[in-house]
Amino acid sequence: MCLAVPCEIRSIENEMALVEAEGVTRKVSLLLLDDAQVGEFVIVHAGFAINRLDPDEARESLKLLRQMALAEVIEST
Image (cartoon, rainbow, N blue to C red; front, top):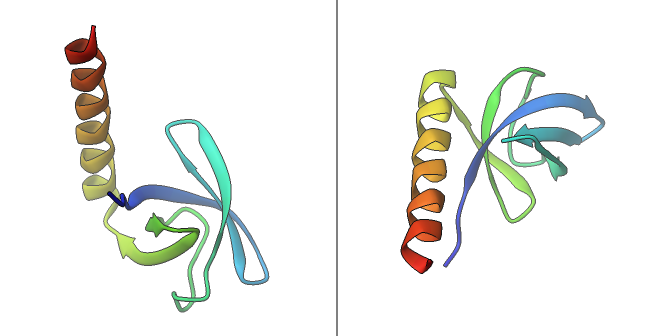
């Protein structure tokens, strides 16, 4: 199963961005997005930012991912 994760762009250098989600940072390619800006939320999949995302929608998606992860932990114990 593949999962695309909403992340906030923290910095940009050339065609790479440092993004953050839930305290985790990583570098991703911006080659698939035109004119990405620091502070924008993007969907990240397989090391690429693939789409912009409304900040409220990004926060709601992250909240749902946290709830799913918590439910999985509770269910496995």
